[in-house]
Length: 628
Image (cartoon, rainbow, N blue to C red; front, top):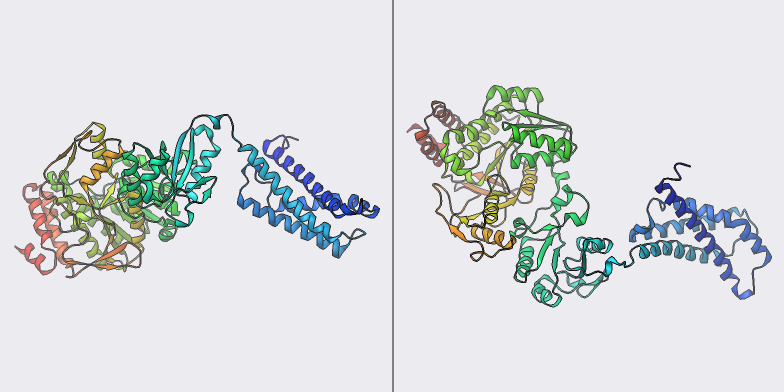
């Protein structure tokens, strides 16, 4: 009795009772229609009905229950449920026909016309009752008749229909959809969920003028940046608010309540670059049930590596960082927010050989992602000792202790600033790539690789947070040079490709370069961010151009002068192939000399010396530069 009082069981009992009445009604009407022209039922069929109605009702209800028709409330019935109802009714009717025709437990036999009519009526009544309940629940209420914010939806696919359905089911949201815009010519003029497809995004300006909506929702999670940019530009001109569904990455990482998932359009949405398809389960399969160590685990790249690796299901994820606060934050996020408890947090410094060897020997990781690095160019120019110590010497320490501990794979996170470097930070990262390449030849039991990419949005070293703070203060927004360009990618996209790159190549220290699309002009990025904040560049927020800092390039490169692009089997990941082989002995001797300068604290000449050595590009010319 206590279970029957529970709302779930009480609802199921009511559904079964209602279906029983509907099945009995369909069976009765089938007999009634069969003998409609004969002035009444013959006595033998009246007796047959009385004998079999209970058997028919019970049999069909058992089949309906087996198909799971009572595991869902009628108010939430969908098109997929109607197909399930069709199969359940068809099977139930077929079983009854077989029983009456073959077993013949009752006499006389059931007329065939009754069997067919019963099937049709049962299907109509069972499906119709559920549809009627949904229509009653979704009928307009008083809240529906209140003035609402009119919304135009970009995209008439699954995402757009989810948005419209959510608005229809939740009148308290205070919005109502007035139409779709979709680039598929087959959908033009069609109606979906009662709304018309008004045209394509190429006609966005005229459609906005005709419909005059108060808000536009971009409901295409995988929409290219060019489409988003065009929509945003047209809406900003007319002072129409724009929101968007999250990207595929955000949808899969976030919750399921759609009205809370809608967000303002962000700068990464309008970069004009094709989004990367999320394939983490496939590309990260080699990490499943393995022990993975991430250095710099509390940083922007390292923390996202931890998030995505945790989703694959490693046996153990070791988080290593020398910053206590960052390590604490990512540890708490893994355990409390993501409920991933197979983690060990290690407070350690990659520059300390004995400590790193201790960590490697203790956990015996199968894969190491080395994301620990200093990356702020001006700070590294002012502190060259720490740049070389942390980016180069620490990479050698981590790589050597990993090889000594028989790690299977070692992946270095590199940067485009390592290409033809003109700063200490870039030079130190170029040295890190060379260290990994040399280690790949010296330690063949471990597969070494470096992954090189450009700027990632919203990282601690990105210009985006700087611009955002400047806009919040009312400007000015400082841009180094009107012609300066940079490559950009979101952190989740870059990290997925890093994980993918860790599973390709021969493991001889190869350098993999992510395809980041076309470079973005920093001044255009600043303009977009100002407009997305609701202001107009130069009118509401001023731009101020500064001069490039020492060693700062106007245009970053992804491949060096002595490197050739070579495609890989992985989409959007290329290999940088050196035309002149690297001399591993020169790398080792050069690093030893620089380490001596670091230990001596000779900061005065270190920065210049580092750039000179790296500019020699290795091989014979590098050895000459070192001997001098």
